[in-house]
Image 1 (cartoon, rainbow, N blue to C red):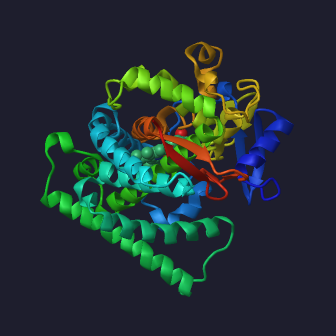
Image 2 (image 1 turned 90 degrees about the vertical axis):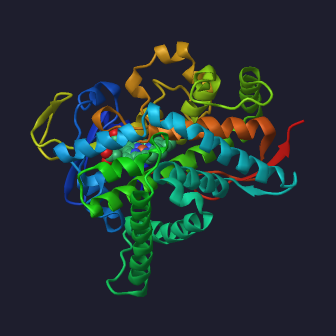
Image 3 (image 1 turned 180 degrees about the vertical axis):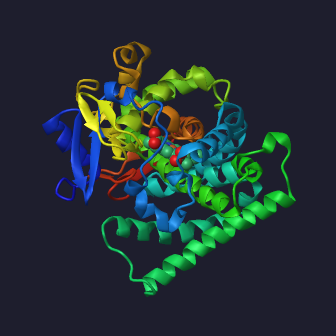
Length: 423
Ligand code: HEM
């Protein structure tokens, strides 16, 4: 894996050599990887996820997290959370997202044409605010609390990234103390959010994820672990989706112009994106899908079963982790010719008919599909049109942008852009 550069690149290599089903040893553990829609079909109903592949997250989100919850308990929590990010809830988030998108656009409008703007930094700031205010309610009306949480989060997340590369902290060391101190800050804030919400219950149309969690019959520790898990899962991913999308739009002026044309034609001069008009923007959806595909944003999911499974002419022994190499599928030239090229035309209705639907599953699939995908799509559908209709985004010349594939795919370095006000 190290020699290939990352797990995603390793999976690309082994599937190129051995076909759609391959196995390898991950430490002492036999792991199977599959990358084709026909094989995915057999996992549509499987819910359980192997804990061993995600152990590096445990010091922060703890063993209580939904990430590690299987069986009936896991299903119950997954469907309760999924409902709280379902259509009827997400439609209430649009006005809030519009406000944050307009605030961000206004602050960028103040920048001079020559100013180099750090794209990822801005997109992360939007994504964390949307996530915290959307999922946890009014407690995060305070920017100060958002900054406090973000600072603690950055310390803990950077530490986890080192652990993933095999650099483990010594127990009781300064580094260990720093991690534990910042982890405590995050859990304390989560406790305050729960307490505050219980003392100030929301009106019905203001209910959000944290209220579903409060109603759930699980321990306070489980609640806090899941709050942190949802934050981590939802913030980085969406922040990076927005970053990659604006990078592609800056790189391909003609695509940015075509998107602007659709936005102006459908929304008119001052109209905004809402739950009931977003479906009128098919090209925006094509750009969203192609950004998810081309960036290989979340390269894999994983499942496990407690019995032997016959698949593709092979037997997978009980309890063997099976990786769904979603990113390998997204780069397969049988479905996506010249896969490294950003081309939203791949997602016209006509072109989509020619591919199996499981060839495009950037949020995972089946019983354990990402529970926040609709929220993430709403964030995208509000922010991108708001920015693009007011500002032309261009890349600062001379940059080499390379992806770094982890659990989520990030640009190796910051991406710098300039913006200019549209007439
Ligand atoms: C572009 C944005 C996102 C991408 C690409 C993404 C992708 C994924 C993928 C591939 C999985 C694994 C699914 C599987 O096992 O089949 C997942 C799980 C998950 N996602 Fe997302 N996600 C995104 C945004 C979000 C958001 C906004 C939230 C929260 C609101 C969220 C919360 C979660 C959680 C909690 C899980 C684990 C669920 C469980 O263990 O049952 N994600 N996501």
